[in-house]
Length: 201
Ligand code: FOL
Image 1 (cartoon, protein in one colour):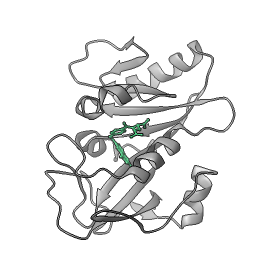
Image 2 (cartoon, rainbow, N blue to C red; image 1 turned 180 degrees about the vertical axis):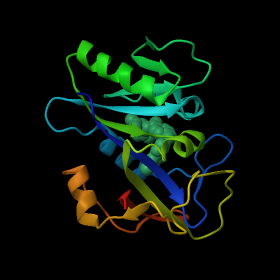
Image 3 (tube, rainbow, N blue to C red; image 1 turned 135 degrees about the vertical axis):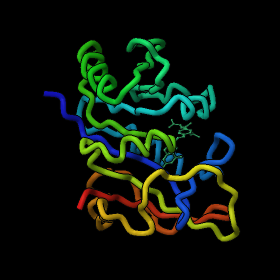
């Protein structure tokens, strides 16, 4: 049976939940993007991870960085008619179809899909956060010293208190990410941020 761990990963401003501006992220945080890359890529043993994203997030990734290397990339769009694999990128029109495709793709390349990361954007987070298959949220909580303009938000309540999700102790995050180094209160320009893990209550 194919039951990979499915986690949402996102960086969001507190307390607003802002995540985007004009189709891009409102910041460029070099250590944070390295954390994203390390966490989404890291596996134990022989498997490979997958990243699932919406079509607009795919378009927001600089073309020199996509498909994100060493991960199976899945792009979701309602206008994809059939599931297909094109240049190592899986196209699908639903999460269920994505998981089916991932299972058979993993078999075809003789690598098990270990973890699946939902990497956005807002519309995808909003639709998938309520799917009980999503067991973990990896949230980078960003505080801004000076106000930041955003036009896109995490589509679900979290920082104002969630009836569904609870923040876990840092040692549980460390155990989830293995040997990746965690730093606290990282400062970059206008921003100070921390990495957190949330699970269902
Ligand atoms: N979650 C977190 N915590 N931080 C993010 O930046 C983030 N970004 C997205 C989704 N969840 C996130 C979606 N946007 C790249 C660019 C945009 C993007 C996701 C990834 C990207 O180019 N990543 C490269 C590394 C690029 C670099 O080294 O500058 C990669 O290989 O992952």
